[in-house]
Structures are given as structure tokens and as C-alpha cells.
Image (cartoon, rainbow, N blue to C red; front, side):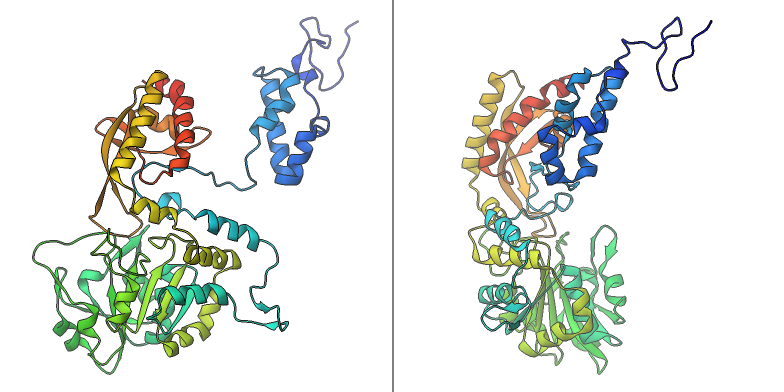
Length: 454
């Protein structure tokens, strides 16, 4: 008589359950989760993340890729470093403030400040009196101290928000006078004119693409003018027969001048002599300066507003300011950026080309000894992130065969470089020296994958 197997069991060729079927030996999820390493991971990462890693390991065992006994070890190896989906990368593109990589990396001091602020804090409480206090007062005080020419300061969640708040408060239903040469697109398809018009303001364009004079602004100003806007063309450069009116030329026209410097430089920088900074614009008579905190300032994403006391107070008390306010983590990172040691961005800006070449040579020699086709070459880095367009910074890079680019991007420690003349260049200007060993190990780990792509 034919014997029927129980539902869900495997069959051998004679119709009986196969005791040798590897799928029967794959451990159950609840048993795998008893592994102390995975139990600890549940507390650290959460059960859904850990169970997903266990299921992937079980599927690998069922498919014959690993032995059933290896499921716990494989699940541990598959666990992510954090519960979030963002992966840290090494920025070897040669673009210091790479928008796709999150722009400015935070300093160690700012990272520690964020960790401290992650729990309950006194963000809006005066511990001495026990009463409500001004939100983010110490971060605002630190910003004010760095730009004493400002009567007052305020912070919102990004640079575009700073400009939107200014347009809403001072020009809703009125005109903003702006040069045609400064009607910029700020990235990802967002255009300055659309942003400003969304506030209810009307734009009055003056001058031409390449030349706008103070007289052009003066002719356009009337009783309906909310303010004159000066915008730093931070991601392009016009050369040749050009003319742009400076803030100092416009401050006597009888209306406020708002200057959007964009890149977040608070004071002049010797490496970037043509980059506008907040202090210089305020001293030239600007009523308000807007900027980004995650660019040349080297801090977290936020929008900075600096200007006279009455104007900044009007901005801070407007209902829209509540929707645009920053959280405690941003405030903590901003304050530590302003008061702490030099940021990674500041260090990258001032790195000496000779020192970068020495590092590149040392890395190339070590990798060449391991059989990697690696060479140290001169390179040219840029600021990026809407700062210092057209400025190049002498740098040094590790040159590798082109297939390394993809292999490095998809490695355990992702490294993002750039392709140039058929080679993968890993520019060192934005890579901290303490990460050189990690970079070398990533290249070694990527060797097999890169060789397989040739």
C-alpha cells in the first residue's frame, strides 16, 4: 500500500520523507533568537531587524549556500550596524561638501553633543528657576558671538527656509527686487523664483544676466517694494563682461537689503577670498543675511538668519517660524560646531597639498606591495555644496583601475571616488588622515570584485 507523507514534509524518490533533506535541519527562528548575540541585538536594533537577518540566513541554508549549523553565525554577520538605513561612507570624491553624501561631516565634538542631547535636555527650561526659557538659547548665543556685527540671530531648518521666512515676513503681497543674473536654481530642480513666489511675494527682475548696476535697482524701487535681494550665485560662475552691484551700493536706496550668501561662511576665509561672508555683508549695511549651516560652516543642516534686533525678532515671532524651527539635536550640533575645535570641513580646506601627496604615496606603496595597481597622483578638489564655484584646491589622490569604483561603492565600508581618464581616483582632501587605514583595507577588500569586473 502506498504510504502518504505528512503535509509539508519532503519526499524521497520512493515517496517517503527524506531524513537527509537539509531543509529539515534548518533551525527554527525562536531557537536561533536564543543565541546571546542575537538576543543582545534585539535590544540594540529591535526585533524586526534581527528577525529579518535570521530569515535571510535560514533561506541561505535552505538553498544550500551555508550549512544549517551556520545560521546563527550568518545571521549575526548580516546584522546592520544601526537600526537606520543610512550607511556611513568615505568621501574620496574630491568634493568637500558633497550634497549626495550629506554635505558637511560633523566634528567629533558635534557628534558627542548630539548623543548627549538625544535624551531629555533643558532645551526650553531654565534649571535654576524652573521656568520656561528661550529655546536653544546657548546655541543662539554661540552664533551671535561668532558674528558680533549682527544685532540678533535666529535658526531655522535649512537655508531655503531662512529665505522663505524672510520673504513671508517682509514681502508677502509686496515686491522683491532681484537681479536677473541671480535667479538661480538651488538644486534638485528647485528654483529661487518659485520658492519666493510661493510666499505670496512678487518678483521684480532688474538688469541683465551678466550686468546689473545699482541704478537698475534704484529705478525699480517703489512704495510696494518689500526689500532688495542679493543672492550669491553659489553653484555657477559668469565671467567676461560682467557687473554686479554689491550690498554696500544698495543700502542707501531706502529699502532693506537682504543678502543670501548661501554657503555659510561667517567671516572671511584666506583660501576663499571671493566667497561672501556674513560679517562683511552686515558691516556693509545689509539688513539681513541668510545662510546654510551645513556648508562652509561645517555644521548640521540648518538655516541661519542674522540681522538687526527688530527684524530678527519679527522673524522669530512669526507663526511660520514654528513650522521651520530646528530640533534639539540640530541645536546641540550647531553649538558644538561654533564653539568646538576646527571642523572636518575647515581642516579639509586648509590641508597642505604636500601632506596629502605624502599620504597618497604611503597608501599607494602599501597597496602595491599587496599586488594592487595603485599609484599616487596629483588631483584637484572642489568645495561643492553651493560654495566657491570655480575654485579648485590642489590635492592628491590614489589612482586605481576603473573597476575599483563600483567595487568600492558596494563594499562593507563604502568608498565613493570619481572616474577620471579611465582610472578610479580616491582624492584624500576630504578623507581624514585617521581613516587612511580604513581606506586601504577597503581597497584590499574590493580587489577580488574589481578584478572580476575587468
